[in-house]
Length: 317
Image (cartoon, rainbow, N blue to C red):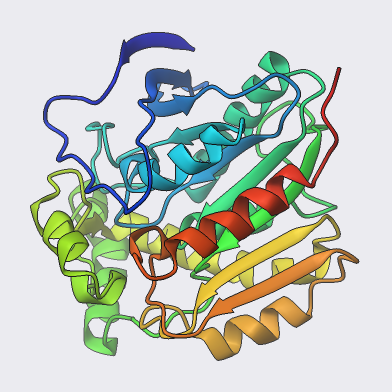
């Protein structure tokens, strides 16, 4: 892990401020992924003894989308690690590509091991948003087998899922799916790296005009992915659908009731399968997909989120 600089990169579009939130600058560091690749990560250092959050962003997003929420958590003393997924955000190498979903899981494992090493005795919270919730739900299973060589015996104290894209309303048509499969099967490296536009519009993320404008201008937003990414997405999605029955640790799910990306009805049925004795589901009735961009619900959303995280463990002295 190496310190790069304090603040934002010059080519990043600043996230619009949220009413009542004082932005707290992050450090920008790199996390070694273990295969010769490093991923950029934003870090907000909190108070000793309080929980440490590992934030996993969505399919089009990056760590910058979480800056307002991270500032609120950090103001309460919570440490936040927010890495950009390989091929996303500030990681330009193989942009939009994922050779294997196991590479991504290994990145998450490496980040968790580093957090556990640097913050001995601190409770760790895995927070997965949208697409990132798929990896989060797998990592926190009681019988999870790490893809890396080492065991993953870490002090994970809880899992938070925000607008988890375990089930979605948005998908490609059958014709496009056939073309993607054909590219993978017969196209070799060129076919597997052929890019396809993601079937998402900024209006599906938020109804806030200010943040819609931000998303349209954001040069780091990922709007197309490779055929390989889409095939690996299918694999990790199927695993995430089966993960609910193996999650026994505390779980908090925060979901917009008017989400046009997530299938809320199927998600609620998935949530009911979680056997954890400590689980909470909060649906914000008229909120869209990104609660981080919702000016109406942001204060309550971050209050529920921060209180739940702080309740996971007493302060270590």
